[in-house]
Structures are given as structure tokens and as C-alpha cells.
Image (cartoon, rainbow, N blue to C red):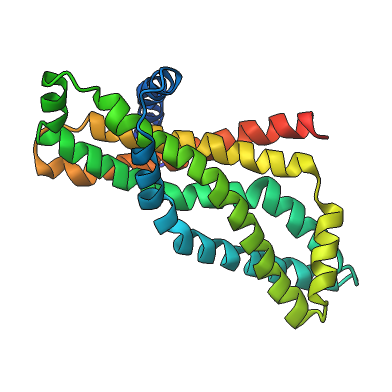
Amino acid sequence: MPAATVPVLSRLGQLFAAAARATGEAVAPLVATARCALTRRVPLLEILRQTHTQIVRSFLFVGVGNACIGFVFALSLGHQLALFNLEIRTVGVLTVATVQTLGPIFTGLLLSGRVASGLAAEIGAMQRTEQLTAMRALSLDAEALLIAPRVIAVALGSVVLTLVADLLTLCGGALVMCSTFDMLPHTFFARCMDELRAGDVLTSAAKALVFGLLIGGIGCAAGLRSKKGTAQVGEDTKAAVVAASFSILVANVLLTRFFLWLYP
């Protein structure tokens, strides 16, 4: 093996190990969230506030990104299938691929860059300034007040955001099919409905829920393990984004295999 590849492999191994470790550490916030949700000690107003902060403010970013993905996917696939006079099949492939895979995974990756880093920085700042210690000294449940609302908001909000992103991805594809291949809009969406199954929508929603739990749990875990000092802010947020993106990619493989078995 060339000596130049050794540092590269070593660095990849370190990134893999760090992502796996951060993913494992996300279990603690998820367990705390489940405990708080079962005992009904999570403030609803805080969940709504976090939904607005983490999800609603991400709508434009995620929506435009997914619409661009649908546009490029339909354009590339349509031109390839047009060589065989099968450009009409672009609609079916785009619909199934978007709802089953493209929508959930790209929404999850975009959210991991915005939300996981934000949670890591926010919780980390509270940890470094000892706000969490002060809350526990006052006998306040920091998990119920800070961690659980954020995880629940990201998990549930990502489901809604993913379903909307699926529609926007198809709208991007419809723009290509109508402008480049002379397909009527109502024909495009009628074929989408013909190709779409209830199992595909459930797959998209289930993946979004799992990805949202991973993003929320990893982001909060990265903030909770922050050490004192502002020099760690960049490292903590970077680690949160890497771990969240890595876990989403791995979870997508496992979930895709499971749902293809469940809905053949």
C-alpha cells in the first residue's frame, strides 16, 4: 500500500469512529425524551416554539433544495430515456424514487446541516455556561424542559417537512416534463397518482421520523458532551453534522431494505 494513502485511511477511520461514537451517544437524549413523553412532562408550548425555530424556518431552504433535486433528476433521466422513446417513464421513476428515497434522505441531510449544528451549539452554550447545572440545582428537569421538546419537534416536524418536500420535488420534475417534453401538468400529476402507493407514503414518513430522531438526538448529545471553553464550539457542531449525516445514510440503507421487504 502506498505510504500516501495511510494518512487518508487513518483520517477516514477516525471520522468513522467519531461518527459511530456520536451516534451511540445520541441514545441518551432519545431515552430521556421517551421518558419525558411517557410521563407527560414535556411543555407543549416549548415543542411548538422549537418546531417554528427548527422546522418552519428551514422550510424555504429544504423546499428549494428538493425542488432543484427533482428538476435535475427529471432532466437527466428524461434525456436518457428519450433516446429509447421512453421519456414518459420518467414520471413513474421520479415519483417512486422521490417518495421512497430522495425526499426523506435529502431532507434529512439538509436538516442535519442546519438543525443538528444549531442544537449542538445551543445546548453546548448552555452546558459551557453551566445553565444546565443551575437548572438541576433548582430541581428543574433539564431533559423535560430543554432536550425532549427539541427532539420531539425535530422528529415530528421532519415528517411534515419531508412530505411537503416530496411534493416540491415532484413539482420540480413537473417543470421539466412540461417545458422540455411537452407534457401537460394534469397528465404529469395523474401519472404520479397512478404510480404512487400507500406503502410509499408510509415509507417516506417512517424514514423521516427516524431521521428526525437521529438529528435531534445527535445534535443534543453533541451539545451535552461539550467541554468548557468556546474553542470547542466549531468541533462540536462539525461532529454533530458528520454524525447525523453518517447515521442517516446508514439508517437509509437498513430502512430501504426493510420497507422493500414489507411492501414488495
